[in-house]
Length: 495
Image (tube, rainbow, N blue to C red):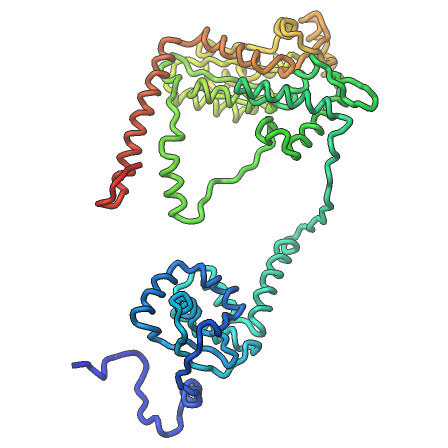
């Protein structure tokens, strides 16, 4: 037997006939609860409903609701106003239309869509509705807003845009549009640059703009068809190339990732929209980021020391591809003690008893000093001279002459700079200086490969490469077992 006095919250009034009715009770008594039957095709969805809850037609549960209506009909009448605008029941109306119903039961509420309270009533009529976070935020805004909800939502978006633009302390800059000129007079230079880039990419080498500059000097294409001026080893030609390379990537003639822009990187940590996105990403990447340490069987810890950031990524890509486990340190001029300490710490954590440093720098007065400075800082940190080998692999004058590199004028600024330049000239017998990019990219990498092979245990290295193939089989097997464990029981097929 049903307990009529069970607790439901609130207090039972002593006498409801004394006229002490709440505002809600008074409204209940004033309403007409007569059920009217209207065609679902004649009912309208208010615009604010789409703004708050989205398009009902996109709701994945409509089809199941349609099947329910076919069996039992509409159990709870819809709420509409005099103009047949729906306040509650948009999903039921859509499902009834799909079920080809001729009519649905409705309560008629005396409120107009233009009334200030319409939006609040719509939200309150949908209190039981399952909503996403965005809809709940919109509802909270409407409940706390006055005036037309549609206008309020629009004002919220406008205020958000104003806040993003003017909300901080710093003044927002009004940026004017810029149109890059079409490549006309520099067309021959552009075509030569495209050919040079594609030639390096075919060798699986991604070049820097500076390396393309030196490659073009061999062919010396026409830089400006109007003047007939040819490409040369000067600042004006290099600036022209930089501009052309930018336009080639903007107009789609070259991919943006076909050239290395050294030192210009976007930092953005990996984030996910929700846990499901992370799980899917993790599962799809499982095993794809694995890299065996090819250098772990070597007796020494190997590191490549690069003077300039412009060549850092160039070396990093090659070492990651061919010598995973070796380090790459970019000094950016004279290295800081903190950077050299990171190198020293990596060596200590490797467990090796010695370190091999293969250094690359420009062939100029500063280049030799930068390489030597790394060794001096390692001594400061407590390493003994016999604990490491520091070899300057390039660039040397002999290498520059071998590959026909184009020289640069010696740079000497101030009294100290003049002294360093003079000592450089006395030591080498020439004032010619060369940038590392002046020799072809493939030759730079060949120098590194030759130096690595001459100093490493090749047999141990090859054994690690062979083991890498066995690792791949093991990872694939683990991947299959992982997906099998996640698969629901009774479902056939596999990943």
